[in-house]
Image (cartoon, rainbow, N blue to C red; front, top):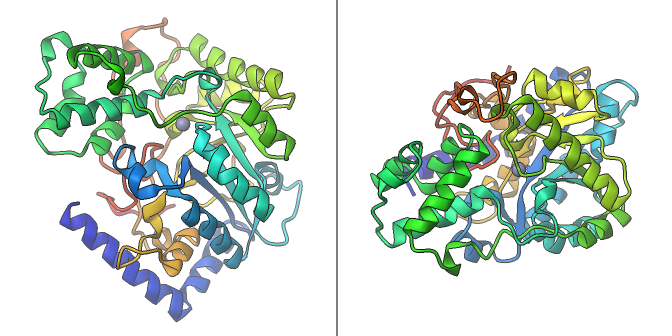
Length: 412
Ligand SMILES: [Zn+2]
């Protein structure tokens, strides 16, 4: 790990201790509460909850992982920090003034419907009586398919391990942008992938996967074993226990890179699939990669949705737009103290957004330009949109580490 990263983590861990024990943490929470209109509405996002974090770290995208034990501690910490663990519906009701909250709210969300969540988060949530919503990319349910981000990560690691020299001539042109920085050692696999995925439509990712698999000679070890998704029976079992489900497109598609008809199909068909299979009404949506546009929001609000969650790490406000809900994406290392062990004061400071108050984190806006009127596959949708902060990692869905801000700015 880079020295800078270790140093930043040490600074945060040390600061957290001071902020916590000096009473500043309470003052910062109160500041955020008044900024939010009287109650804080914290929405946290997780991906995979695993039993063996260190083992899984060897083969998976780090920023998607949290151990079951740390996950449990997060819930306890949120409770201790004065949050009521609430449902997304409660949060929306409080935001639009239909309900007044007695306490600050914390909403637990999971993106992508990984089976780990069923295995390791669901029992903890059930035991503690904590509500949660899971956002499902429905084309993956009841299949053995793996997500493009997990497949690419796995392939890129094989490329590294085998010291393989890709033949760029037979790869799609954008592949150089992904592979170049990794092979030259400028970026880690996760960082390069994180930058790349947000800029290229699903079609390009699939083409690169296919071409790389071919160059690497095929074989079963080119597909990750981990990263499996829940099946409908598991979804139904959680739903029977009161856990909620929202839509997350069909194919885990970044909608702002797609034309109108794809946007509509991905939103409507994922909603209908969950409603048909689970027998619930789906009203909530999570934007893939955290990216949204006015056009995407229009499709959601015209089709019975009440909310959309982003990955913008900023406070929610009472009276704010329920289709641009802000979320804090968390993973194991958000709680890593000075000695590499779990730090209660650091976790508390993260949940209270102390580093946001201090301007030590840099939220990246999820709103993107959308060339939605173009024909399917038109080249204007595949050109890279402007990224506000190309190396900032903790705002996109595929997070690599919480502490790599390049432009220090305070959340507005
Ligand atoms: Zn996702």
